[in-house]
Length: 118
View 1: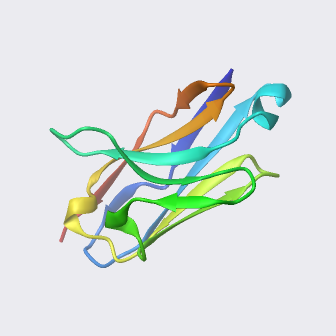
View 2: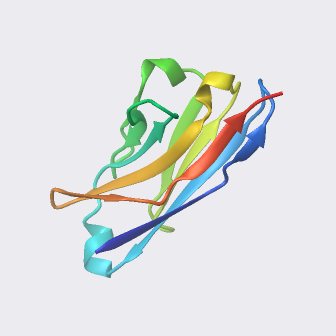
View 3: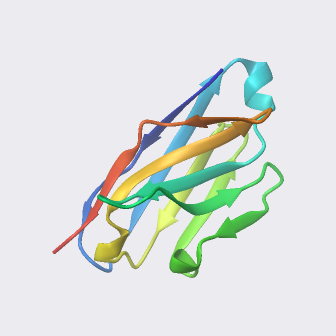
């Protein structure tokens, strides 16, 4: 069993930046078994979509719509994944969810709201 807790969302003006964090907790066995951690987002009326992912050895993958603006990173010692979001646009407004895969089971956080508006 793995618990994921996101933080760092909020209201920001277009062109601004935010840094999201997702801390994983649970049994040592489960935590050490986490491979890929990802950020997804879901805007009102839209499907949830992948934003970025990172493996436990640091390989990253980004959706085209965030390439060059967002950076995903991971601190395995702290069991935490981060999403640095720069040059934010109004269309980035969504609830952002953290996701972790453990032995084929997907775990989700509760989500954190990001609103980009002037």
